[in-house]
Image 1 (cartoon, one colour):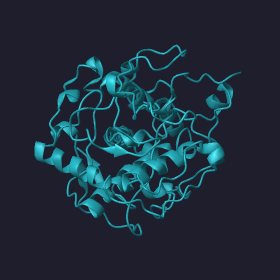
Image 2 (image 1 turned 90 degrees about the horizontal axis):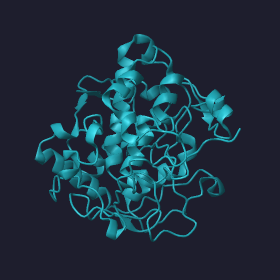
Image 3 (image 1 turned 90 degrees about the vertical axis):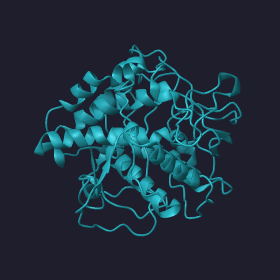
Image 4 (image 1 turned 30 degrees about the vertical axis):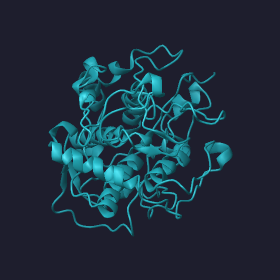
Length: 357
């Protein structure tokens, strides 16, 4: 049976880690409290935007090392003239097949967002917390949501892209965020309500309405495999948020990209919305973990994608053998010390120290 894959872009996103120096396991006594973006003051929003922009002006880190065969990853080589922010993006590009539709999806992204926050602090003096984006608020009327209407040049995220300029975002604090991959451009957003090609799926926003997320949270206690499978599914909440935004978050190729550019989830961190989206993905997992003690340390997943056909994917929706366990290490392509899956299962132990409001 042939795998049903969308012709437009199948986005299966995820992400890695960036913290400077060795990671130590500290006792968490005063966890930071992550808040929804709209709960930030204008000053707090501006501080986060400045720090993200700061990373885009720092030089490339020569420690970055691609670890996936380029014939498999099918991405361009490392651009040494790029920025440190580009390095962070590149790690996600390189590790794409290892961190999506495998058991690494949720723990790796949790780590990635955490380490991105640490990079903001250690490299750019940020003193705040990671914001999350509760997209269930915007889902009912996504295109017209007030979320897209903050054009303030210091504290706004900007809105939809200009179709006459390759959907580049013309306003907000990231209007001049210059990116290197897959080709030089600025942040792009292209509202795409039905991005699933020939797949018989509903409009993208229908998958992340509040009742749908509640259904996800009602996954039986301890059934990690089913929880991840539903969350990361084609047409599920995770990929739908990526694809409905389109542009960089949706993994489409810029107009000036090389002819061999392959659309996909690889460079989705180009759009800083990625960090807030994946903080929300992490929050949904966090909420499920806290609903029942059986879910707190529940984990199951393989290390190899099983996307050859529908039967294979249905059997191993979060990766086939060799199987991972809590002692398995997570890759970072040289930009961080590696940690284990078990180190990030609890947000207030191991290497982590945060909670959600």
